[in-house]
Image 1 (tube, helix red, strand yellow):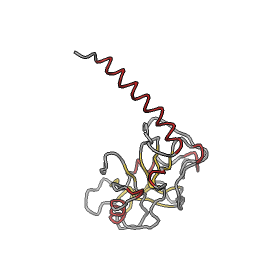
Image 2: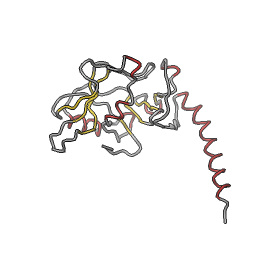
Image 3: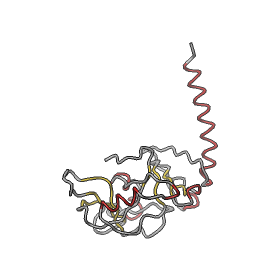
Image 4: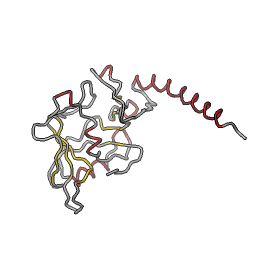
Length: 192
């Protein structure tokens, strides 16, 4: 009979060896990136040059950003067009950002995980200092995949405003135009 402790030790040692080489590679922006996501960790950035939280993935033609704090993979530059919710959903489904399919609209919680209340004040949080995202992101609204409690086909969806004076999170009808900021996750499904 095999010793389970010996097997566990071997697994941990192998894991530690992979982890240390992956950290060195991740810091340079070339894969493998091995995110160690944990919603209880806080990776603070001051500039894009020394940001441990976000890694622009060079293997993905610099079109995707790994958030090592949450493990989510974001488009480096969100879609500039505003469109109704159904259009935004289809836009994300049809994306081939970085040469990869499998994108979707993020949940309201995932979008909120990008915001830092310390950047603009608690009433209008913005993106954290040192973030690598491109395009015009302030004073913009983004669709989420999260639906309101109404279960009808025309049910309103949650919208997240980045550094907006209108509202931080609101519920709006799906015909209202907003931007899409697509995300890619291991499960590849809409968790809402």
